[in-house]
Length: 326
Image (cartoon, rainbow, N blue to C red; front, side, top):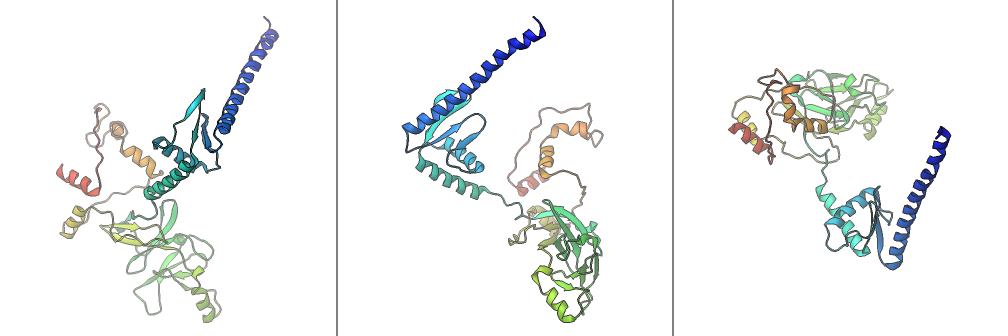
């Protein structure tokens, strides 16, 4: 058979495949229409292999959450009826759907984790020079940490004037009779900000009245975040809209040992270009140790240990107690 004959012989098979696919789609649509006609008071949902859709224009996230709740509910029918390939058609009571959506919304609200409403250690305090501002990043937010002479301060790393990075600025004496205090001066136009987050000086102002009007404007103040120094670390609460928790996530045994005069713990810090998700995956994978950390301590590629056992502990206190016990 010639090349042209082979091409001609393939075309009917292609038409047949396309025709079969069209017929399959028409059958699925017909089944949905039949189900709707038989149950006019019911809503129809379909799982058509390429994704689930609830036919009430619900957002995708809400629909997916509702589908998951449906599978756990005894009041709603399971997908039933004709099955076409990976497709299944079923019906669901409208009242049950609304009720389940409310349950899903309540469940999501209860289990939601607010990443910004937490304390995070961002640096070893002893590593930061108190005479300079320092740029840090937390949860994708650029921040600047500096010392005002009495305590550490944290701002969003953006001057409210022209958005220049405040970490490129300098720590200068506050003046005004506050010799022991310092301000953070922007390197672009010299605006100065005190530790409480207020703008204190605008050098471009032509009169004291104009400067007072400029510095008193809320728009002249940088966004400030709560920051604390404890157990040798700087902790930041990366939310300017929620009140920080009083307690830091520090094991009680560690806090007690420091208060008992046993000294601050020793820290080692290294910046790595990846997020918490990759780090967590790495930490729960002990089987890589002999290969990635060959030569460190007793780790050797030639001595692979199989059958690692890992245990999920409840909190920091349990972990610290376990490590102390070993």
